[in-house]
Length: 419
Image (cartoon, rainbow, N blue to C red; front, side, top):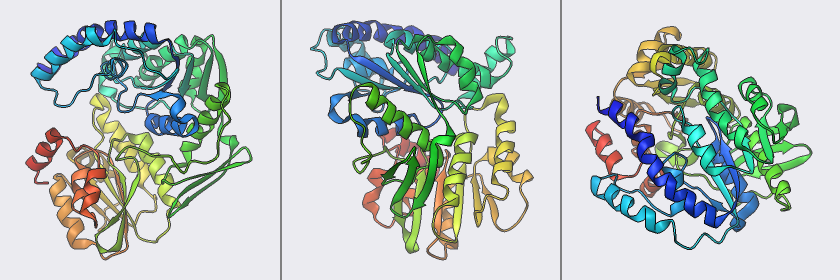
């Protein structure tokens, strides 16, 4: 009941902030580049930032129908309390008339968590350039209603159609993943020039202890993070954006950074290496992380995988898909955390001591603490409070500040689960 009311009010309230964001945007008049898609948006945004530097403003931490208007208005949400919302409502009209930002380029990460969000945001931003590199089943449960109503043949089509609103609003250039048929199908909606990025452009990919090396169209890019092969689409897009904006592209990504939970590397207890991908997940991103992990050095690699959430009626199908991905994945041990994995993924995996399932993340933590021999590579991917497990396995406890979901509300939830 509460969720239903929130969903009904979502855009009604968002339109209030959008109204004032549009005023400030009209006074600012930046060149707008939208980065959208199901996976890898934040990585792509940071790669573009490595190319453009301080010449642009970036929507760090804001990608929704609330977050983007707040970013335009310079407003911040911290506590999500009723008192804070009152403050934001009062500040929005004032913020609309503040001095515009100095930067003349605005790089925006934009998501489509629900129907109408792509339409809502694209009509606000009216981007000059759109970058769309992925379309997969994220927040699937929010799109099931439109499928049941006969508007789309599948959730996949419903999701890609929503992202397609951005390409329809692009005025000059669309940079897209030409290997994704869902994205390709939506290109008929744009009148902008389309630049295709294809896998054939990737000439080399190597994962090392100190980062990842990509060779793309004769150029070599060394990035100080562990990144999946599919990141080459975003690298190629960042180069194209720089060229389009008249900025000489760089191959130097030494200043590249990522927010927490996107394959950050930490030293763990007993000389282990921790790969932290605990921010979020879907079946497609698990496939990507498996591919990346195959290139990791070391012989003992463990995958700690959390439930896929917000899949609605596709929950069983998506978790069964995980089982097919995990079979023969090369991990010495699979640790599944959550009731969905236990119900739908575990039964399809070969039963052995190397496949273990836990409902409670605290039990998974206790198993890890008692079973690690030393020097394992622990790859974490997904929800179910995996960041709370990682917190207790870090060698340097100061690294806790570098994990995702540090806000008080998340600390309280982890404590309720014994973490």
